[in-house]
Amino acid sequence: MIKQTATPRTSWVGPALTGLLLGTLTGFTPLLEREVLSPPAVRTLGFGLGTTYFSVGLLVGLLPNFPGWDRSRLGGVAFGVLIGALYSVPGAIFTMVPYPLAPDAPEYFREFVSGGGRAFVLTLGFGAVVGGFAGFFRRRFGSP
Image 1 (cartoon, one colour):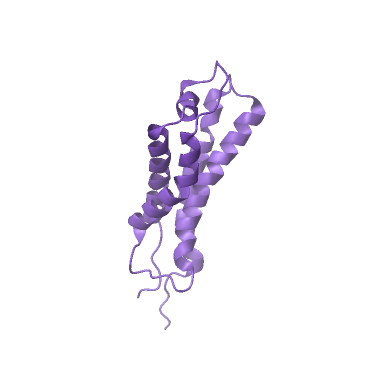
Image 2: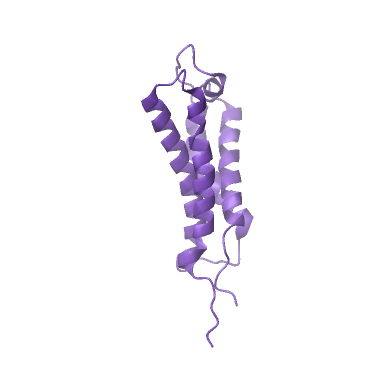
């Protein structure tokens, strides 16, 4: 009888679905601001947020499947937090740069467009949370 272990093909499903779920929830947040955002802006912002966090989950699931990756060094939640935070660095830098906004924009957007360290930390933090959850749901493979 052949002993079956999880394969690299199935190990990415849990993190990808976790990223998809958290990305979808985040992607729906612009709907809360429909009165001050145009429909194309709601769709575009929502799609951008959703795909960002979906891709964090996908990375957490796929990166350890590459040949030569040392699976024994860093795995699970810690790996997910690291990948999520690193992946969020460009977005965090973007949120630090202030840019103009319409006077009737909601406070949530005002905080992120005003720049500064708090927006940077919040962006990195949420990426790390998504990555950590994705790492938690990642199946380990290759061990008996």
